[in-house]
Image 1: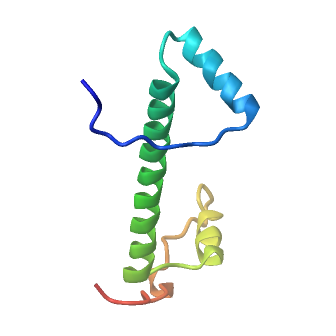
Image 2: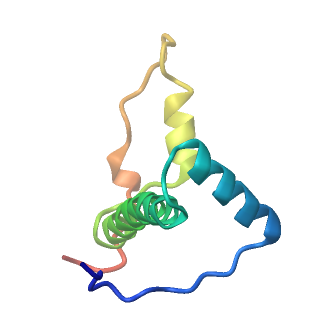
Image 3: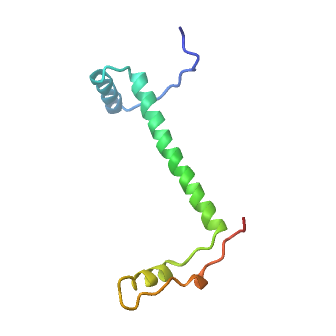
Length: 98
């Protein structure tokens, strides 16, 4: 049965093509299968990263933040006799509200 998925052409360096062929042979898979698996894994990883990055940017734009100096100054008091609670009055207001 012919595949309903249209083919895509990809150009590889000779070294990559040779490695791909060798890997496919060693794993008893087709080059097409190996490429498809590699692209799916790459996209899943990158998409998850981009989604997390976008959520972080959204959080920074809609929630208060704190300067690194204020956070580090507070962290340096941890475990000392002069340990301090974090001073939330030093919050930097969000760039936009939710």
